[in-house]
Image (cartoon, rainbow, N blue to C red; front, side, top):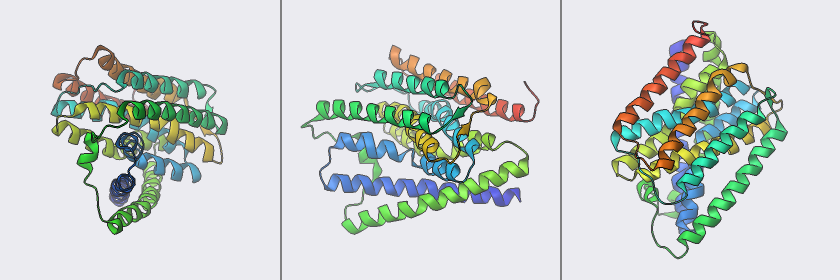
Length: 325
């Protein structure tokens, strides 16, 4: 039974990742065909695309009444993005920083994390809190796009990530990419959520643990793939932007949407305040310190990041079994 569930989960993740990938490629190709600003594409379609798996999983979990998966997926993904994704990328090539608003974005990431913790202080996250997160998202997006458009107006420089995407040129291929992605994402979300809930039941653990570990790791694969490609191309300033931008989007957009559409408020358990929220905030501050000091995240630090992530996962499992307090 466990093997069947793992196969279903793996199949769902494949649908999610491939569906998100081809949808982003199609959307970027369509935007470029109609001469949308390259920087606007990078800040919207590409940044949004790496978080598509988390979004569709959260929507599916929220509508079917599994709040533990919602919180676990978002919080676990943010932790994995920094410790695992940034750490693994730094092992390949040192993480450096571009000139475009990296310090500001890292502050926004910390502020969004603190805001989530404050909104969850009463033990629930309902529609009002979700609306607050979405309003903050709109504000951050407008400011970022206005600044980026002003800085890059008239520039023909092509964003590095766009060149690595491999875009379709034929209009029919663009339509096919978008259609395949639009079909694959919801199918994958359905398989992933069902398998995750069944797995939690059979293993006798809280669904939030599955969301924090297996599901968070699986839905963070787009960020991992994007940043590793950037590291191989020695363009790690793009890698840092992907991680930071994804973490901001996860909190403000994905959790905001989930809270708004959920029939019932999300219950935020004490476990999140005892371990997961502090780790999420601590990792955000940790990465930001490197950014503020403009110190590259080199291989030794990357190894430490990955080791800390492994330690965090082990600690989660031990706490779930009551082996540690």
